[in-house]
Image 1 (cartoon, rainbow, N blue to C red):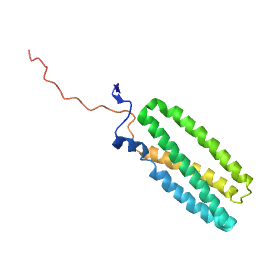
Image 2 (image 1 turned 180 degrees about the horizontal axis):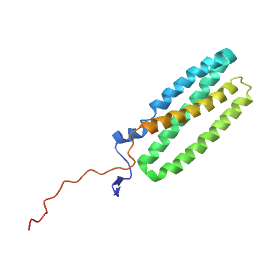
Image 3 (image 1 turned 30 degrees about the vertical axis):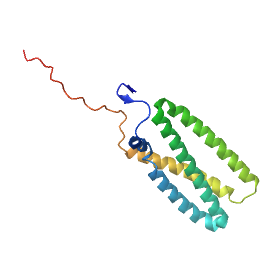
Image 4 (image 1 turned 180 degrees about the vertical axis):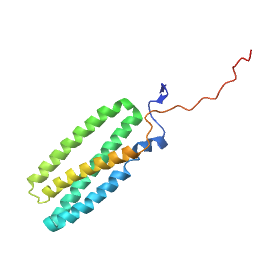
Length: 157
């Protein structure tokens, strides 16, 4: 279905991956957060602190990748689904994260504090990395349909 030059509905597999091309940059940034966080947590909290940092960075990475996949899917089906799917995904992952942290805190595990700090650091770093990628990416905000060949209907009188 084509409306005003914009394709609405399922797209080809090749163009579907275009929606995910930003992922390597924030994932690389998450590796940096993991290395720095582990270096800070190791002398302060030992292996428990390092495990907490690893769990925190992993939670943020997985939740952001899943959100990206959900929004990319919604956009491939119908761009009008992006906002509702994004909001439902956000609320769901925030609720699950809260329940997970509350359950983990109830166990008395000493890695909860480093995990919480790593979650905050990873979320801020992911956001900054994705924003930096977006600012430097050349993303057209209008899809221009291909030019149609000219027809020979001119009258030379």
